[in-house]
Length: 270
Image (cartoon, rainbow, N blue to C red; front, top):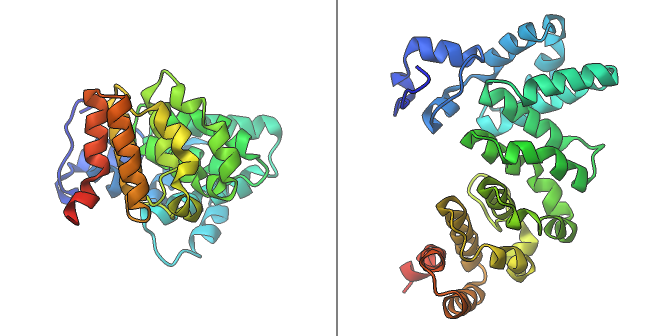
């Protein structure tokens, strides 16, 4: 079961697999499984596991305000409820509960923990990046995606500080960390709010992009290409200039792959 490939459609997920996923006893193995999780059901099992059955009202009051139960609404809502629950606890109990979520076998529960870091109003941007780092390096694709989404608003509000803090991230030996820094700052990602300042001034993030212009990991290359493709929708001439410069100064197969991906929208308009 641990080595399964995962179903292509939600209706094809075996009942025993879905049950274990909903109970927090398995990781999801693909996007289909990840999207199939009912986080309200999973939450009920998690509260029982953590000995917090009596706290369900805290979560229900938060979740009842949701007009829609889409994944990118429900995960932040659950994180907000956790913050409310953790607030009156002793420091030791807060640490126990957060660590239990942050290291949980369920990737979905680790996603809650990542969002708790991202929306905690008492943390500075630097503290949020320190706290989100384990999730940015997580072995699971879903946790890594949620990690950058969780701190994106904070980065957008403190962009220059955030870009400076990420300088070391794009030089990290871990490809997941490098990719996180790029994905976090995309001007207009698919699943996240746009960053208006980078749509107008993409050059602000150029030092980050230049550090990975010939990255050996395709995972990072794709993110860099997507970043520049985003920018091409508002600053096409700038993207063309960057790509031309990179091809002259870094004539590698990795750079060529990034540049091709970066200009895909521009090529469609020709």
